[in-house]
Image (cartoon, rainbow over all chains, first blue to last red; front, side, top):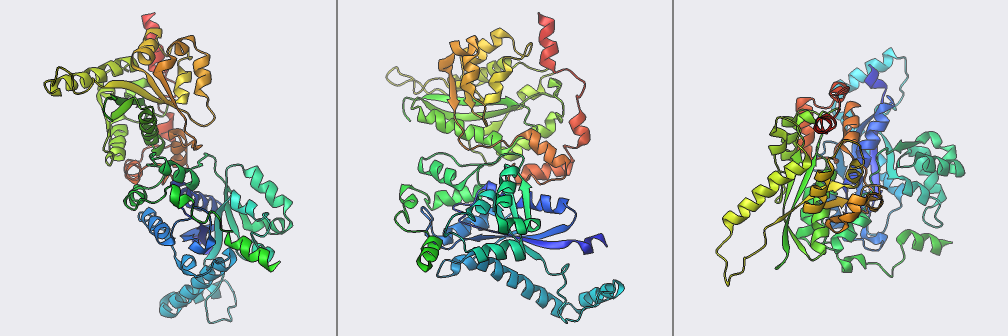
Length: 275
Length: 253
């Protein structure tokens, strides 16, 4: 009975994943532990959504490689998956749109399950009768059924909300207001301070879960790319299959780091030109 | 890499359990020693300490060995050695180093081809102790090390010391006359990535039912779960016991 009352959660991480590292994967594990420790949630799925090439970040290598590395990295995970919708779009997609897309996907797949599984439907209806809850809709779409989607990110993303022309304010409002954020941070106080100093974040502070990473783990993709350029080992910073993939395809060189060097980041270009 | 001195790196420690961080030490050290232009790293040895060390929370060496072997299965240059853990009493690091150096030297002399032009094909490999920066501070703990052993480990063999978090190994060297004297045989490797993942933290996470995935190999995590290692009880092991080096070496004074 207790598990019926828990809200099902799906964690969505957007980012370059250039390349994916053990730190990215740890984020999911830490967030899941934290959210389930509250007793209110059951985390049912994790989604890694690598950004498209049209993001134009310096040093961003082709999405096909970044996707494949993420797949190799999550081979042994029973809950973290990789999704290519975002990277397959021809233009860069705002994070809010990606969140919206995945939320819609979650709802439609729940509905498919409901249509197919009449036994489950029947049981659920009985439970709700017992609880005296009135369901007018024929879609069983209660809070405890459709998983909630939350954006999973590091504190740096939260703080990037403050960078001019990087985010649309209505997008920030939508992400924290309608969906919610699980933010992994080393220094809990920094994230909390930032939330406090932003009216829109403060308004939706109940939807922002600050997950304290007690054990510092700063394995950054930037550091990994630097080590690779210098012929240094990155073993044990990323899963072995990813290390092998990088070696087999000779990814990450001085040349690859220069990609998009003279190009403006897509969101900056888009939002600055509309001002 | 012709003309370079062959080098074997030996890491002694609890490995309770072995983590990605331990394995990173070897990778970082190898890269660093290669970049000096002087060395060619030919092997790495993980030597888990014996149970009689008496450290709090130390699980049986058979488990620590098994986990290390699982972790290093896919490594083509680092292996696990059980000599130290098989000794009846706790064995000083200097003694362990002497044992391994003897083995390496014997192997070298056995396999040496007849010299052409009167010159040997390569030098006998050197053995150096691989450690983290925190290790240097242990030299200061009263009764933990014999002075002549520190001379031998640092002076005769040498250290490859990987910096850890905010620890400054050069300060530890500066503050010790003995270490300063042997400055040339201490190689400091800077780990720029701030990574404080320790076996202590991993044991803590396991006690609390938290995930440790991606901090150590999956095979080691599976082993820990199968054998139910690292619980509240296991952490209490040796709680009121004095560390063996402190009792063994006091007797000899």
